[in-house]
Image (cartoon, rainbow, N blue to C red):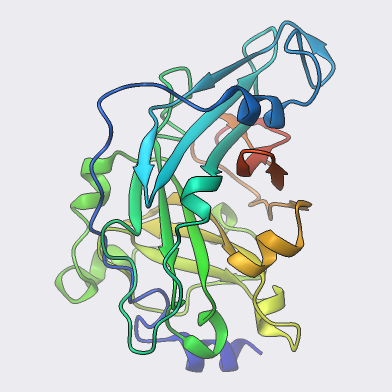
Length: 286
């Protein structure tokens, strides 16, 4: 299996079509709708996951297609993180461009940058990036379905934007963190993507079985450190799994002390979809 994956995905093929051209941010902080916030924590606004008084903070609202996307951050009474989410409203979802033979991927406005509310610990989650791939991307036999990439970066936008093509900085792409900082069963198929970095894949994930790609979880690295976490989810999977939850593979070690998510959830609300990182646990750097 390992040799098959490396042969199929090596030489920088993985996500090589993800050239970023970001859409402009709105200059206001309207945040998510009340219905989206209610979807993040069902029930009374006075309670968050059964804990009285918790809060939800929203990031800047960003135009996407004919709708809006934004980020939400939920904490308990002690300001400990509970959930970090990206919301896609119905107007955006219903105006997604769909596959076209020979069409290109990830050109503006198919990629948007999503700031988090300042309450979010920027050492661990600095900003997010949403990529809509209407034709999928290479290798097409694995990831050639219409899908979203949700990059949750722990480095600044300036840092990400400065990542060059692989052939201009192979030493930095190939400077991998110690494997204890990545989950078991993850491999790097080689190469790297400008303005992103290396993408590490889970060899036990469904896309490498006859079941095929529906959802998966990617880790990203560059120049010796883990730089992003990435749920990748097909449009079809969203629409057939309005309520879905899975674990996030965990590394043995983390480089920064803080709270890390252990689960990913999809929620369909009356207003659209939520992609949620949740069940945070505190980990000490080692």
